[in-house]
Length: 361
Image (cartoon, rainbow, N blue to C red; front, side, top):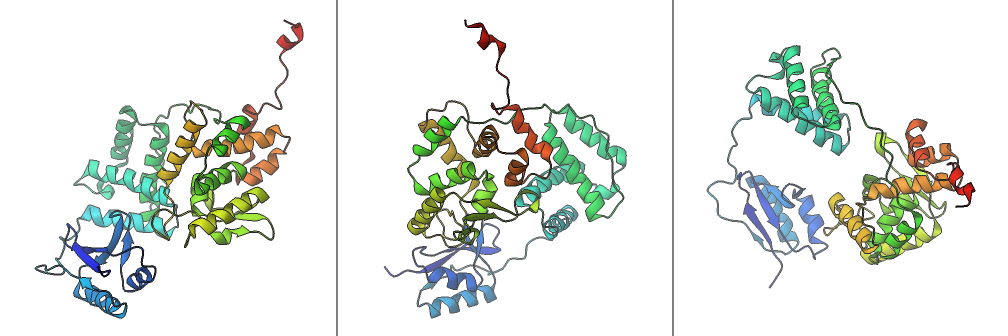
């Protein structure tokens, strides 16, 4: 049967889901150029349900000699109901976060926290609330048992609205905060890291794990890498826009370069160095954490293991090998040396020998 493009009306009747054979390498760029968009929420491709959009798609299919199947619908576009005042406000809020180039995680966390704040006080709008109203809300959430981390997100999300969206003076909310526990980073022994890596046969999975441990990369930094970030002449790997929007250049081990080349030859990524099932889209965070979990199980590691533990292990093992802590700070991309100093609490090199060992028991 000849390949075809088909449309299916979405539930809100404002667009079409677009289905086409992913194996056709020439068709996908043509459809994207005609206005087809990838929507993460749909886990697929989408086209506005307007006559103009359908006509552009029809012309693209004609040029590609591919049939287009459009369902019979009463109307190609059904006007959605007008947005509520709260929806308009939330859209302004998210737009400003995007314009300020905050990270996707910050946008997600702030949006969720602020939306709960709006819903709690509906139908009143935030500008109709008093300072005491905000304090009462925060105190109520604290009493409900939210974590300190989420409490800080909630306060920052509310402050962002009043200070950034509405340009009001800086707001201060004196809410009791629990004392933050001083926890040491969880690390793996080198023998555990070796077992974890040796037991991972999939080249793509092994390359991602080796980047996290061999260069101390964060999860998001691994997934954001592109082939252009590897400089084989300088034996360097470029991390662009890491945490805090900081760039850094890292020394690339020769063994890792060879593995990355093999991974590229085998999977032929389009945009990102590590891509998922759809070309041009990055490997998902959830899938990578699952890779780490399965690798740890194969290595016989019983305690929970995350990708960030490989970053902690990288820093700890460097410190134990005698690397200067300020060099480690630069490699990790820490703004403050105090952040890096936490690894001195777990590194074994600087710990004194116990007098028990001198008793000859």
